[in-house]
Image 1 (tube, helix red, strand yellow):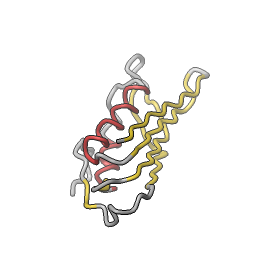
Image 2 (spheres, one colour):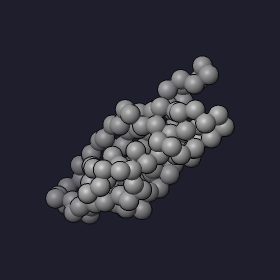
Image 3 (cartoon, rainbow, N blue to C red):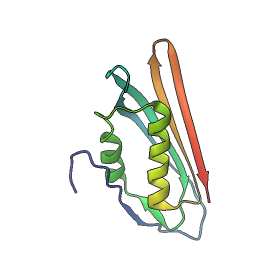
Image 4 (cartoon, rainbow, N blue to C red):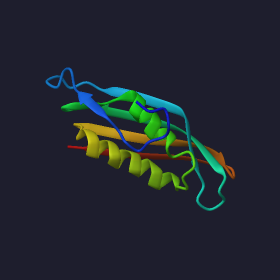
Length: 117
């Protein structure tokens, strides 16, 4: 597997698809670029999901999140895109993605989006 940023998410079969359980990830090093100023935006991305048939592979998730580093994106757009891409890959029972963005111009922004099947 590559060690360069990639939008290609990978999955593997859920070892217990018959049992509802929650998986949580926290990425405190997420970075994207403000589309207005070009300056970096730093965030913690939190993902909570109940898998159905598949689970996201962690290295691919890391490289996927890393791929936003040089991309201009509003907080709301990037958080929703992460959710959309994970839903498309996993079709989870339920999932929530939270983008907890560092203070910029005196404003702390948290964007939370959810999906359930």
